[in-house]
Length: 85
Image (cartoon, rainbow, N blue to C red; front, side, top):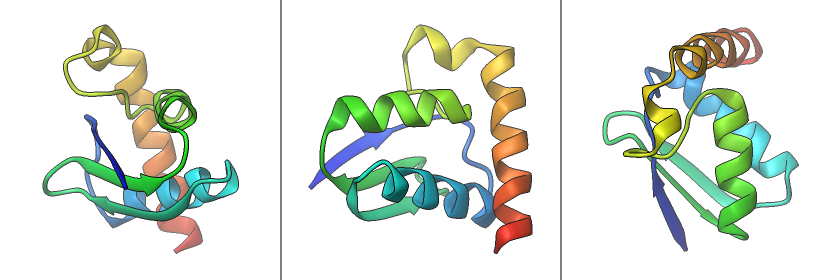
């Protein structure tokens, strides 16, 4: 199992969006913990990082983690997750 620490995960809506997107990308056994800002999965780590970054949840300590645009994207992903939940 792979684990990636990310930023901008705020709630269950974020978790739902992340789980759906990573599963759709072919990753298995996806779990998300918004309190620890961790995403666990089985599959390709690079695929997970690309999907997460595109959604606004870049890897912790990366240059993208400082981006205001990524924060804005994460709010959008969060809202979608709440609606679909």
